[in-house]
Length: 401
Image (cartoon, rainbow, N blue to C red; front, side):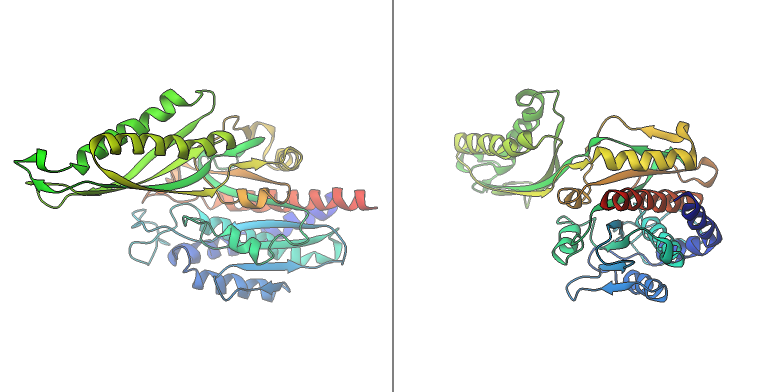
């Protein structure tokens, strides 16, 4: 395996500048969730030129790409998300977004480029591979629903024995990776609350039911759920993102709409929160003479890494970047990631790829107009993804024999 890995690394180093150019192309032409047409066809062209079998969908722009080495051999999947965000870029970089109000502010352009680089390297050495390689180029990770379920429905995990994914991470230096055993990221749910009151003149509030006042009491109550009704040893977040209501300064408001998100890392807590929320909403609304509508939508589940798969990533990364640059993140974060849907069905590992370089101004947080990825991180990502996939296939192949 070591000889093959060296050949893969030699290829990755040889194509590194090309992969950077691909990343810059993707960065200049970002596309929102569900609109990844340019990205799809750029990716598809490269994969077809390297002999991959492509599975497409007429419902979205995702791709499944297979390098079939031997029927019945183990299969490992590598996933990359492709969508951008509705943010106006302010990096001033020469490859900055050419699409007004849209930019790759989360690093998905780098994820796609890294996966393509690994795909090219595997294709060049396909005859030596101990198993099959599948690449999942996924749309709509940034959407509320997440694109992973669409890919799973299309068969992305059929015949797959394990899966790896990564994410650009500006909180670690370029040349470092972050890993986490077990629960790594939170579930991500959304909700909406409508409060219905009765309008009246602002000078005669007793003739109406003030939906804004009712809403303020509901907001206060919701913020007490986490602090007073949930075990502090089980992190949870209830955040309200929007409140809309009212039409004039002298009219008692009769309708308010609130929208927000809930994050947890405990499934039992997750399922109990909607009941606690509605109990508070119902009690306050009734006591104030208002009515309400409450809608809660369960989104992506917690992202739970498989320990054995994390071991593979860490063992390979230590050889590439050094043990001192493999950072145990220890605590989960409350952000969501729909890679979690894949991990519900097959063993896998998701890790953080350090992209912070102060000199290149790439240490800005994600979802920020000045976010960018250090191009030097791409080669690190390609090597760790390729080495992890190869190590997994080699272990599976030995067990099969």
